[in-house]
Length: 241
Image 1 (tube, rainbow, N blue to C red):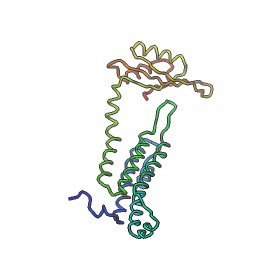
Image 2 (cartoon, rainbow, N blue to C red):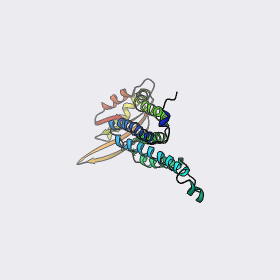
Image 3 (tube, rainbow, N blue to C red):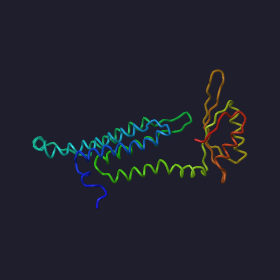
Image 4 (cartoon, helix red, strand yellow):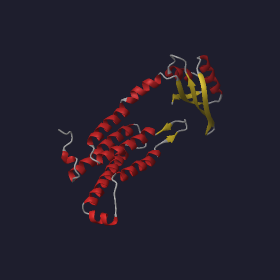
């Protein structure tokens, strides 16, 4: 007994409706997760990408069907051949440009938007699979994507919390604060291997922004280091990046 009814595997109007709706559902649901985190691409963006990809694959199948039926004589006469995968390949290329637009490098030297871009790409791939009628792969991929976005971040955070490498972003009201931070870290046997800073002017007040990369000794927790640095005089804010 097949998991998916055979009628939905055929190239029929009911099957087309199911494929487009399925693409909208999986794309929109993944987009909602991004929307909650205020990412550039959210609910409607993901839904439209998946829907467009599904429609592209259905169009490929439709053209292939016409080449074998209504357009068969003409295609044989002029020697036209069609490849149903060509449209899908162009979708993957096009989504690459869309995803690149969501990736930014912040003033804190953080790269943001990679997960959003990857989500758009996989939403397009699921749309192609839905358009081709490969429902089992769409459902399995959707479940795995939701696992990656909702469950694995907890495991990732727990793993990174014990990492020996730590990057922090610090805002100070004076350049002398960097020396005080370096002294504090040296007392705790923490090695600094990179520092980037710049000076910003706000009205008549200046502010120092710095990104400090360091390596921690064994059993030194990230939260302990952040708490220690926050006690330095002149610190406006400090956070892990």
